[in-house]
Amino acid sequence: METLFPIIIRVLVPAAFSFIIGMSITPLVTHYLYKYKAWKKKPGKISLDGSTASEFNRLHEVNEVRAPRMGGIVIWASVLLTILGIDIVAHVFQSASILRLDFLSRNQTWIPLATLIIGAAAGLVDDILVIRPGGEGMRLRWRLFVVVAAATLIGMWFFFKLGIVAINIPFHAPLYIGWFIIPFYVLLSLALYASGVIDGIDGLSGGVFASIFASYAIIAFAQNQIDLAAFSMAIVGGLLAFLWFNIPPARFYMSDTGTMALTLTIGTIAFMTDNLGGGYGIFVLPIIGGLLAITVASDILQVFWKRVFGRKLLRIAPLHHHFEAIGWSGAKVVMRYWVMSIIFATLGVILALSLLH
Image (cartoon, rainbow, N blue to C red):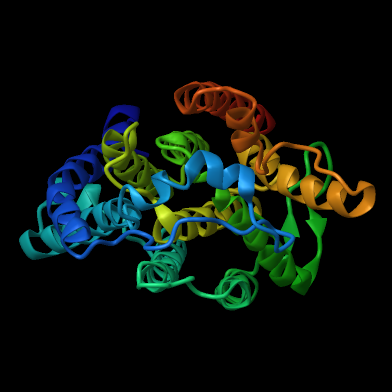
């Protein structure tokens, strides 16, 4: 087995490359996003129950048309250029040192890379539809169809090709669910996709997602899934490059091409670091992604409260907008969410690594 130092280099170098590439391509991405006015032409948002989100619109109506969407291109493009660039250079020059950096592998990174590409492409289509004059974007049912279809195919790959039929449970034998692993993966993907609404304040989602992917990089590293750890860190590098330009006032917004790619990829990596990798990636997901879980729960509770009690539970859902509505500045919400995301991520990693021994 390789000594620890070269392995760490293999994991960290892709993060550095992805960050540098992300920083380098941002001026070009920005140029075209502003040139083609890639922002919503009509401000305003509709609540989950179909009513006008008046409180949200009061706080964010101007911001919705202030900067372009599709900033998520910086994230997934930097990851794609990193993973493909290293792979191509390694095979062209046949350099042993570069070959060791190549983390494109069938058993660890093909599936999460495919998930990233599918989510990015579907989200990009939705963003393009949104920025048209009068555009409302892809209908929710079609977006959900894309998520379900993609998750079903990947779930089938997990079941039929990789033979995943169980979920690891701490202090207990793996929970055997057989082919139900496919619908389980679909439901997990839908829940994670719903958490994409955390992309609502300048700088918020980038910091939260970076903590989550960094956590899974550590977990994959501890499980000797080095290529998967490198892939996760490449995403962290892309996220940090995006975040450099997304802090208030944001140059662009992540939007669906970023959130759909990232949320779906989180589910895939959680699966890869579970029974397949001999760990507990799924079990610790609600902890590492605690803020994502809270975001989805706050939306569900808001709808439930209005239907059952006839009034709102929160001023605005999801929860981060509620904090804005009660007087917190956007920067305060973002900074505190970053702190909490690091805390959740740390607790999740500690638990995951403790369970390995």
